[in-house]
Image (cartoon, rainbow over all chains, first blue to last red; front, side, top):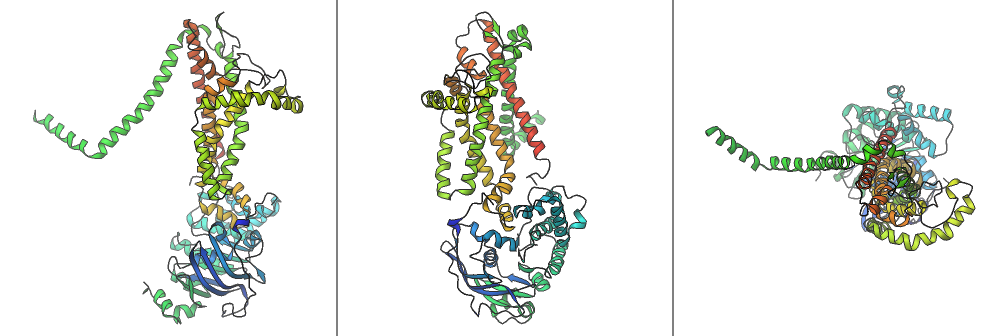
Length: 277
Length: 318
């Protein structure tokens, strides 16, 4: 990290408050991430308006809502990926366990809070090098330990059996579903505590989607998972908790079965029954 | 003749549809390019016949150039062209590529836009202007303090020994470097900007710093475009005539020292063509043109081979 380039201009305008007692109610268990009163702006456009919620450890939290409702922006607040956009600005507080996520070292935060993107985006490198990338930038050089970690990550991403004979082939030779699982393995390699997924199966067929969902279901034993999805059935199938966003606001947040069976708000019901708009 | 009439009617109808016209027009223009290339080779080949018959392959290895005695060897010029281009690349590639990385990845947008405009302006400056800059600014600087300094510090190397005139291989290489940097920067910057955003984000998402994401993901992803810019720059350096002629010293002798005055293929053609009166002299100059043409093709072929070899595994193209 000798040549690390700091991004002073990109430091968000943070005004951290102590985690308030009412920082978003949480239905069950110990919260891994507590978000309070987040207001988020792209220039003068407000993308999130007073969002507070707590994400439970070792649970799958699904975020649903129509396009442009702010759910992806919310996900990008959790690992501060929004900082790549110059005009972005955030107010409020995000706590990862007891640490202020908006004030901590951003590379440290992103190592602990991994991310998988909408479109599979492997690097134009071999399968092995894709998974090893995060380990290498975090300082692991030992070949044997790299190999071990790559295998472990690929196993966790349920991809090992399919690629173990061709670790040094190009990642682009894999199918779309395999590429997305490779991206999950790449994110898992640095052993994150939280995994953020931004519509991870929207570009995949139902079989590949099923594999990813099954994988997430196993992963939640070791990882806290937050997934943005357009697919209501997917959220209902895998989520423990679900938040419904509409026009930058968190309308309702509750256990998934409550959201999908007996939502408290009319907007939520309209959206999940397809009567929205 | 009803059949012919029917045929011409169909033809007219078919020509009216835009597809046919566009197809024929573009086909013609595409073939014109091939035709020009073929004509070029044909002309160079036939008009250099006299020289080729007299000297054969020995022309390429002969190191004397004496128009009065009728002795013609191409080696000093080939050497000068290759050495000045190599110096230009050695200096220009690091400068051009790092400038592109700065503009595409690190600079704030306003700075980047302003600098990009200036750089694209520089790429359009005529080479004779760079030549003037070389004569009046660079050559005096080379004479003192650059070359004396190089001799003092790196004088144990054969390249930095011998008399110091200011003009020479090094001066020509530096002028070429200045000329190719804008071209390389401009094209490399485009290649870097074309790297998908999600590649950069994937690197950042596993805890890479901004520089690690740039250097280990964005730059490798754009390497085909960056290589391309280097080869274009090389092609320009090999063929550059005016600026090189003004600062290389125009001396048809081979010297290991970069301080020594030399000559390049393009420069000797430009300098001697109007003065050449004897048929054999003209023919040798044209054969030098043929050599330059071949040199360009060989270097481009090697470049493509290099690209093929480095992109076999994990290519950026899906």
